[in-house]
Structure formats: C-alpha cells, structure tokens
View 1 (spheres, helix red, strand yellow):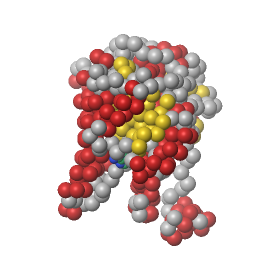
View 2 (cartoon, protein in one colour):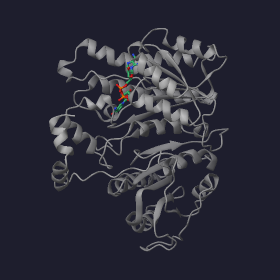
View 3 (cartoon, helix red, strand yellow):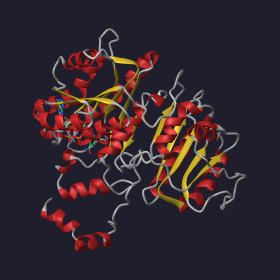
View 4 (cartoon, helix red, strand yellow):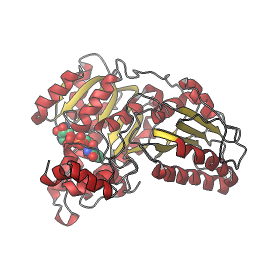
Length: 448
Ligand SMILES: NC(=O)c1ccc[n+]([C@@H]2O[C@H](COP(=O)([O-])OP(=O)(O)OC[C@H]3O[C@@H](n4cnc5c(N)ncnc54)[C@H](O)[C@@H]3O)[C@@H](O)[C@H]2O)c1
C-alpha cells in the first residue's frame, strides 16, 4: 500500500473522502443466496413466462394487478427483495406505462443488493415493436444507474420458443448473489432441445479446464467451479508452478504446468484428460496478460505477446479440443468460455494491443456459437470491468481509485464475481445461452 493509499484509508482520510462524495461502497450480497424480501412479479399483458419460470425455481412471489397509472401498486410486502417484470408481451409504447407504474414504488423500497430483472423479447416485428424493445433496454440501463445500496437491474431477451426450463438458470443467477457485479446488462436466452434441471451442484463429476489458474481471477474460478462440483484441470506457466499446485490441491484438482502459447498446448490438455478415459465439459480461457503502452510506443513484441496469449493461443487450443476425433477433447453438451474485457468492448487509452485481443475474444465466441450448436456446445465470453487482482493492483493508486468507483456499484468487483458468471455459463441448465458476451463490470461507465 502506498503512503497516499494508507492516508486515504485512515479514519481522517475516510472522513475527507465521505465529504468529497466518496462514501463507503455497499457490501454486496454474494453466493447462492436469494434476496431476503418479497419477490414481486409484474405480468404485463398476457405474459406468463415469468410466473412459469419462478415456478420452475420454486420461488414464491406476489403479483400485483397492473391496470395502469397507479403509483401505489397493491401486493408489495414491506421489504421488496426483487422485482421481476415479465415484458415478453410488451409490444406497444403505451404498455411501457405499466413498467413505470410497477417500478416507481418498487425501486424506492428495494432492499440492499435487491434485484430488478426485466424479461423481454429480442427486437423484431413492426416499427413500434422494435422501438419498444430498445426502450426497455433504455429503462434497464437507467434504472441500474439510479438504484442504490448494491441493487442491480438487468434485462434478458427471451427468444421465441424458449421455455421456462431454458430461462430458469438465467433468472436464478440474476436473482442470486452470484450476479452481484453484473448490472445494467442485456443478453439473450434461446431454446435448447434438451436442457438440464436446476441444481446446487450443477458441475458434479464434470471436468473443467481453467487456464491461468495459479492466482487472481483464475484461482477464484477454480474454487467456485469446484464448489459447484467440477473436477478442475488447473493450467498455468511453469514459473507459477508452486501457486498453481496450491490452488489445484485446495480444490482437489490436477495441476498442469503449461504455457498456452506452446503449439501442442491443446494436445497436452487433451492427452491428460484422455489418460483418465474422460472428456472435457468446459474450457475456461482465463490466462491473459497486459503490456500497456500508448500506440505510439507499442512495438511489435508488445503487440505480438498480448495477441498470442490472449487470443491466438485460445483459438489454436479450441481447434484441437473441439475436434470430435481428439480423445480427451470437449464432450457433446460442453462449454467454451473466453475472458474478454470492458477495455476491449469500449476501448481504453494505452491498451490497443489488449483491446484488440479482448474484442477478438468476443468476436471469436460469437463466430463459434452457431457452428457448435449441433453438438450442443455453447461458446460465450465474460467481460470483466475493474476487478481487484494483482493485475489491477499495478495501476497507480489515484487512477485505480477512479477506475474502481466509476461504475453504478461504486466499487471494484471481486474475482469471485467473474467466477460465478462463468459458473452460470458452464451450468448444463444454461444450454440456451450461447454466443453471448456478458459484462461483469458493475455497469462500468466506460462504454457500459
Ligand atoms: N483484473 C481485472 O480487472 C481484469 C479485467 C478484465 C479482464 N481481465 C482478464 O481476466 C483474466 C485474469 O486476470 P487476472 O487479473 O486474474 O490476471 P493475473 O495476472 O492475476 O493472472 C493471470 C494468470 O494467467 C497466467 N498466464 C499468463 N500467461 C500465460 C500463458 N502463456 N500460459 C499459461 N498461463 C498464463 C499467469 O501466470 C497468471 O497466473 C485475464 O484474461 C485478464 O485479461 C482482468
């Protein structure tokens, strides 16, 4: 900790910070926990998907009658834990009034780390329907910015044909503390021909490969997935061998010392898994590096190393591990997860190489998803914002404090927040989620 940082965290420093509007950020609800207060379901029009999905999850709810224009909606408990708005039948501008009517009294009474979840359809249909689909997005992003005390708002686009079983894992994730740092986001869920039921240990007995597992986000991924039942193959460079072994031991997994840029990296992973007569359920491409410089100072080696580790290596490994003829490769119904970054999606000064590699990861999973659908393999990415790790500890203090507070939750995320989002994507119940890039950034103001 620098002298400046120590002063900032001293009692006097805290008082000065509070006066400058830098109040202590809220402590977020995390883990497989639901909100404590009542769950309110607003059904607009003839919508039933939300109710049927909550039934799949076994969550009781109160459903106020919405007849428009009322500011005090009947049926709310004293403490509101979450509001689920089923807007899947909302097609007209005047129906948006129901969204306002149910949210206005609810946002005021929402508990700390409470939830707003909007279920809607993808943009389609006539001009008005398409406009309304975007309007709901605008509501979600703005409500997320207005909510206080760690409460979040997110919007799920449910494709036609998707059933409550397809949507259940997504609604479960969003209501639970696992989505603590996912805020103001939108992604889509489609229909999968066969989808597993909801489970507390969805990865039981399944092999998941995690690269860059020796520390930071990768170590948190290994721990979180092991909690969910996964057998972890923890990969990292030989130089990180000691901490890699410690993480692997802690989670009862296997350590594999391997530089992912080696031409035979995919083959070595498959070989290890094949030696057990098994196949892989999930590959989490977490290993990544930064070599930051303004573009004017970025030489070829800084460019090449970042693109090799963060993008080219995972593409080469995917080619091997997704080959059905390779023993120990990814099984039918498997999962690929890449780690992008908000820097890649929004651009970030001094990180052209990193942004190229991370936006490339988003492009890669979007391209892979349709090609893998016939084998029920999904490909998705998570894009972390500011997460408290060794990587971000290198940023100078003042800049770091600005970054960590520049989001709707006024704090940096924890590695476990990224890990939980990956766990949701790896869940066999998330079969209908593919080709998505989900930000775990607390609604980072940078390109949110
Ligand atoms: N920390 C953040 O705020 C943040 C934000 C956005 C994205 N990310 C991404 O999340 C991932 C993890 O980040 P972190 O903060 O935990 O980083 P970290 O530097 O703490 O850990 C990265 C790990 O990857 C390993 N690694 C690097 N090159 C490798 C290689 N060639 N082969 C095998 N392993 C290799 C390192 O040894 C290290 O253990 C990275 O892809 C990073 O770009 C992090």
